[in-house]
Image 1 (spheres, rainbow, N blue to C red):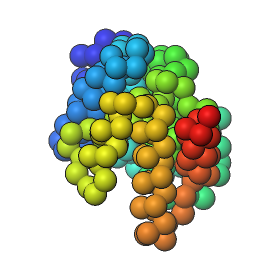
Image 2: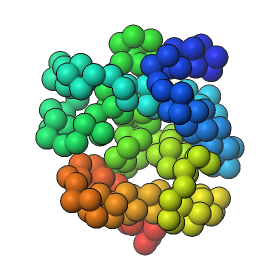
Image 3: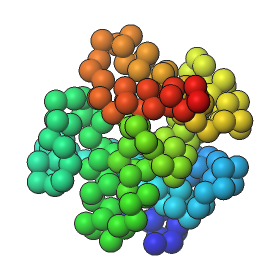
Image 4: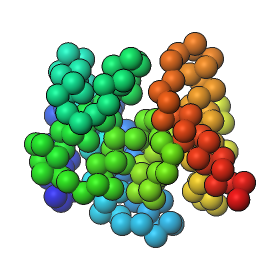
Length: 188
């Protein structure tokens, strides 16, 4: 699927602000793809679709989770972690996008997981550091993104877990697995 076709599909499903975020994530992801020698086409498509299911009704997302190969334990956690996995199913079912790297980048862009592939890492990081984001510590992650992909992804995992802990929020296990995975990579 071409970029312009994907944008036409995604734009009506998002708020104006979320659509702008999506375009910034795609631009950031393409820059990281250049830096880390990964397919620009794959990261761009994954970035465009990463939040595609974000505003679907919760009841509909729950049905997708229950009626697909997605793990049902997603339902035990805050619905903010549902949209990535649901979008990964939707893009295959509705648009025939069956490239595993693209689908997994969409699926894990919020939580991460152990063993993320390079396309997944780029989307995980790009979603966090896109230029519209502004919160304490982001500049350190942006600086690290230009030096070491794994270290930057570890910082994203760490910061996300710390933020969720500060809110007394539940944390999906894949987030802990991602943190440990990246920490192990950094210590090798």
